[in-house]
Length: 100
Image 1 (cartoon, rainbow, N blue to C red):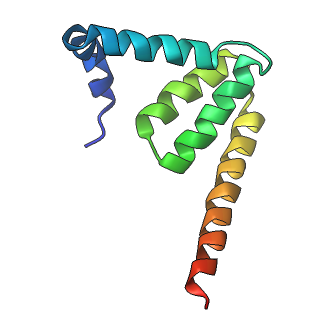
Image 2 (cartoon, rainbow, N blue to C red):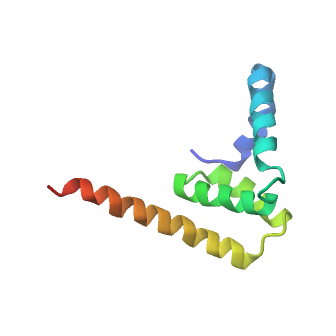
């Protein structure tokens, strides 16, 4: 189902629902803008979330954005392990539901 070419369909989606897409674009821009947290860190957070949600579109978009924001290969690698730790931690704590 995943096909990077689908990203080229976003303008068509915007033309069909311009108000909703415009609101999303404004939110996305505001959420990822430099602020108390620099954009590079926000992009690395977005990557960690994308890794845990396993969204290939988000992975590609935010990997490129993180690199443009100055993220190093080492920072990308460490971000992978933040996501790994969170997924493992979630499995561990959800495992407590199996016990009496």
